[in-house]
Length: 391
Image 1 (tube, one colour):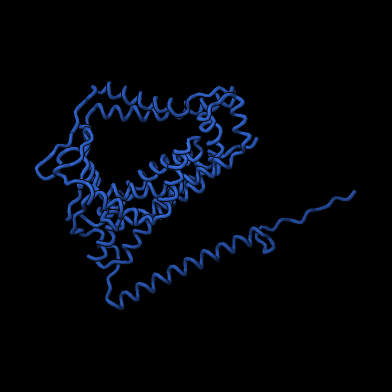
Image 2: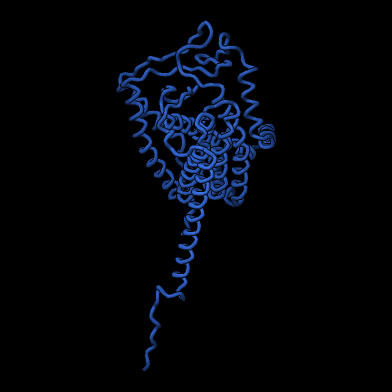
């Protein structure tokens, strides 16, 4: 009886597909690195020949300009790197809040497209067709003109309870920070973990028994309940810094500038129109038999949408919605058109003062690249978790 011998594997042989693939990748990376180094060297030589300064030493020098809106104090004598940090936080604030509001508004409008009420359906269709067909820059200018031209002066603002709305922006009361707020924050942080495990339990229980449990209002109640409990343990402080009418402007309290409100509202209503269409397409991709099966089990239309249709539609919704989140983040660079001090605005000022155009533009590219990659990685992780697991 003869035994066949397999030829020995030769992992480092050119006949190995894996080895050839590795060589091709190494060559490609080497070519890319060499190209980047050549372009960088050529740029430096040309700039030096024309007497143009280069380098990153300017980051440590005093900025020499003030920033009208920031989350923390900034003085004109402080370095450029801190000015860039403020611009980055301003960009991040618009992007994060915009993504949250866009998700809520876009989902509501997308679901509203399936309402039995003709008026609701018509309003949702009109919203989508109106806002997605007007360039986002024009919408930003529209909102900015509304805040700065249509609204009354700060000396005579529109009053909505404790809120003041005027050309100076939106002024609102803010709690005076103390032990109660700290304990409330700790309680809500703990509640997020509790709500996460409760929601997982509710979903598994529904899959096993078919009896639906609240997967939204119960977690919200847990978070609010723990927050209130922490607030009570901390002494239940009721002190607020409330805005008051001054002689020329609104004083005290918190404030949102018209520039920030214009950017936030403009990006939100624009991107929400696209998200609504994505949600509508995802819902339509779910087989009609799923809805009929849910109705046979006695689920209401709202329960069917929350527990059956939307979870299955997520596998279709998440990838294109990720693109819309990225578009919203990158479109925030248009805020420079209405004077909002984001990272692009800070970079433009730095270019005019230092002449370091290459370095300043590189910072802008790094900011948007890092935020976009983080958004993509986060959404890909969520997409993997939301994907329907095959049995």
